[in-house]
Amino acid sequence: MKKGKAPLGQNFLTDGYYKNKVLKLIDVKEGESVVEVGAGEGQITEGLLRKGAVVTAIELDPRLAASLREKFGGKVRVIVGDVLKMDFLTPPFSDSTVVSNLPYYITSPFLYKMVGVVRMEEGRLKSSWRGAYITLQKEVAVKITLKDGRAPTRLSALLNLRFLVEPLLSIPRDAFTPQPQVDSVLLRFLPREMLEHSPGDERIFDALLKRVYSRKRRKLKNTLEGFMNLRLEDVRSILGEDDWVLEKRPGELNVYDLARVSYRIWQRVKVERNIGGQRVK
Image (cartoon, rainbow, N blue to C red; front, top):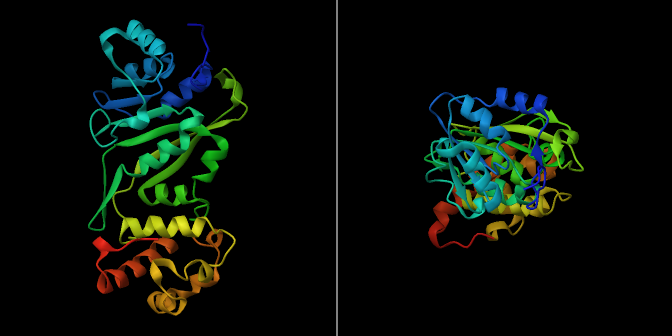
């Protein structure tokens, strides 16, 4: 296979300077499990092995997978398959650090699937992963990073409630082969242990976010009327002293404001209705 050929949308990090910077920023200790998604030609894999990590490489392209086996032998477990069809809560993912220069075309489905890695259990958070280091195109990285606590998208809100999302390194487009049309950013996703504010029921929170972020220009008083079959006066009553949020648009609120709204609605609904049978809309 020709070096740099990327039939499945991969852009390999081939610049030595940036490759070394990325590897220095990945905090894994000797003997720890690492899952590398889209290992490609093994540029990062090699550095992870030098750190003493126990590496599982997932690669969709059978030719690249064969090349990885030939290059690393038994030092790396290579799995050929579509990562989006894999269970993120079981081995090799569980209790591992995930590393990926994520192919752009699977970015959104991968990140939405990642939300389920951190589960809410009785007000606490429990993560199946140790954490993740993921290189994303700059535009996406900006959208999923909180600004002053504000989440610009539903995905950002879902991720930031569960992870501390931190940009670590900007990587120019010419550090990759073949060269993409955009720059990239390495992000660290560190699972949170405690909720700053519980949204109550995850289904209600996600339904709330879908509704709010599909109507970004509307004030919440217009968006929330009819949510869970609630009238606006019901919503005002439920929110109490927090009813000021009704005069705000999504971009003016932070993720914890929205979590509080969800929690208040959940408290009312769980008393008045059978949550298990309630259709969230």
